[in-house]
Length: 471
Image (tube, rainbow, N blue to C red; front, top):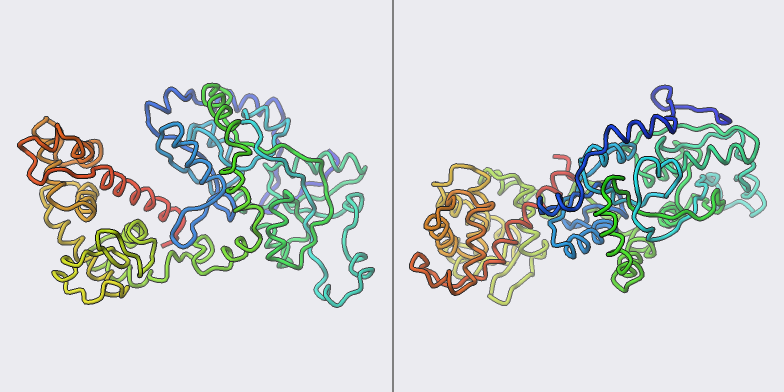
């Protein structure tokens, strides 16, 4: 091997092709699309990052995230994100069955093709060298600036480049070392570091060089102006998502969907949103509410924590509910007359002594007080999480409608004390005449899809918040 291998932590070994194939055969679980549909949930493995999946102003966003939502909807499946905090573990997690696919921009390489299959590619990138300009680069002449930088890949001999071990960049450096006939030092960085974080460390002077896909490098260069990304180190590579080799149903179905989706107006809007808008990228990662960096969700975190403590609920759960109600907009209003962060109705506001529903402090205090009232009304529900869901559904559509759904479930022999796959199914049925006209129903018709999705969306968002917020 022409490279001198350096490791941040300990000496590293590289899998041979034989060991990769052996590991794949041992690890790959048998779980294709037919079983995924029975489970009713598509599990996608991804990573946190300012283009893939992140939380911004309380909203889950990201290129992979938005496309996954669209595809899961087309498959009529619920979407569950499985976050890998170590990028080096992506393929192992996939073959272990932690998820059904890897939804992250992966270069298709010969080594990876031995481990997984790929969807059809959705774009192409080429790799570039990321290097830091001299500290006084703004005052230097063009000639002096150029003399301080790597100007050609042949100059990388004897230099040390910081990358993750299980990255396509590593494979490229192996080949590049042979091409230039000189050894290139490699410093393996922890798999927990995203490419964005590694680039930041180059900008700060902690690392000398790294390699990145040109699109990611360009975004980061718009924020870290002291970087040079002008030197290409590879030809164009196809970028795609990964699927287990024994999941042909899922691969063929995704390929068919992606064939129509890629290049559509919707796809182009999402792609441009995350990879072409330098301004949006800079605004996000410099914001106080780019949660991965700051741990903050909204300007009202402290108020939410205070009032969540008063009712003994997790503040992240209350935050997820408030986002569902108003997206943290204190001026929000609904057609029905609800107002403020927690969308309190005028009659309810009077009962709760909320004078100004648009005032964040009054709204959060009054709204959480009302949640506690509803929670206490459901004292017959033995499980605390299920009880919270009953309270949330009541907050959304009214206590009486949820009681109606509970009575229907009881009459039909269902579990009246469980929301999930229990009373929630009957809240849906309250929009149908043959159910809302039954004698057990006191309050009549209800648009049941609203409380059903309301509870589900809040708990989905709660899981996202728990992943991204370090408490």
